[in-house]
Image (tube, rainbow, N blue to C red; front, side):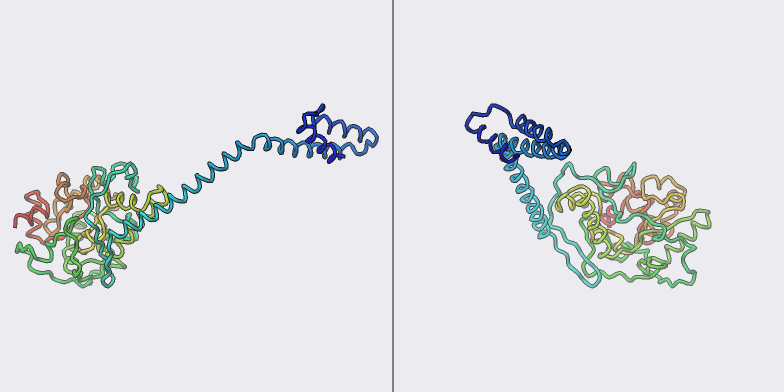
Length: 362
C-alpha cells in the first residue's frame, strides 16, 4: 500500500497531475486502514512517521542537490589544501635542517648554524611566564632548564674531604689562559675543548680547577650567615642540545609553529648549544633558599648582594651585568657567576666592565 502511494506521488509530481500531496495521501491511507483495524493504530502511526521522514529527506536533497554538491566540492578542496600545507611545513623543516650541521665528538654535540639573521614574526613567544622575564628586551638568556631542588647543592651537601685541584697562577692576564676563555654567540666553544671534570655531589659536575674556589666562596657566605645554593653547573653539549630541542618541540606542539618558526623563536631567547658558558664547567647559577627563581629580583636578595660584593675575592665575576647587554648579547642575569681567576675578577669588578671588554683591552 505504502509503496503504491509513493510511486503514485512521484509519478504525479513529474507529470504535473498530483491533486493531493504525498502527506495527505499517506495520512488518508493510514486512517483508512486503522478505521477497519483499530489495533493497528500504533503501528500505523509509527510506519507513517518513518515513511514521511524518509520522504522529506529524499525530497529535500532532490530539490537542493546542486547546493550540497557545491559544499562537498569546497570541503574536498579545503582538505586537499590542508594536506599541501602540512607537506610544505615538513619540507620547510627539512630545508632548514640542511642549514644546521650537528657534529658529534664523543659525548659532546656541537651545533653550527649558518650565519643567518632570524626574521621577526608575530609568533616569537617564549615558554616562561615570569612577570619580569629575562630576555624581554630582545637579548638572550643562558637558562636552559628550570631550577629544581634536586638539581642544586649547598656547602652542606658537599663532602669536606672532596678532592680539589689547584689551578694555574691566575695573577697573569694571559689572553690564552684556560680561565679567560671567551664563550658567547660569536665565540663558540672550540671543537677540541676538553673539560677536566670533577664530581661535586650526585650528578653535579664542574671544571675540577674551579671547584676549590667555589667551595671557598660558599663556605665564606655561610660564615656571613648567607645560605647559597648552586644549580646548573656543567652541562654537556648533548644536554644543552636536548634542552634546546625540547623547547622547540613544545612550541611546535602547543603553539602550532613550524620547525623554522620554533627554532628562530627559541634561538632569539635562549643561547644556542655550543655557545653557553655552562659547557665550560666554570660558571654557576646561584640562588638562595628563600629565592629559587632565576629572575632579575635575585640581585636584590641577601644572597645576590653578597655575591656582587664578595665573588671577586674568590675569582668569580657577575658575568652578565645590567647595562652591558649590548656587549655581552645576554640579558641581565644576577644569578650567573663565572670563574676568571682572582686578579682578573677583581680588575673586572672594580672597573665595572665585562669579560669581553677586559679581553679586548689586553
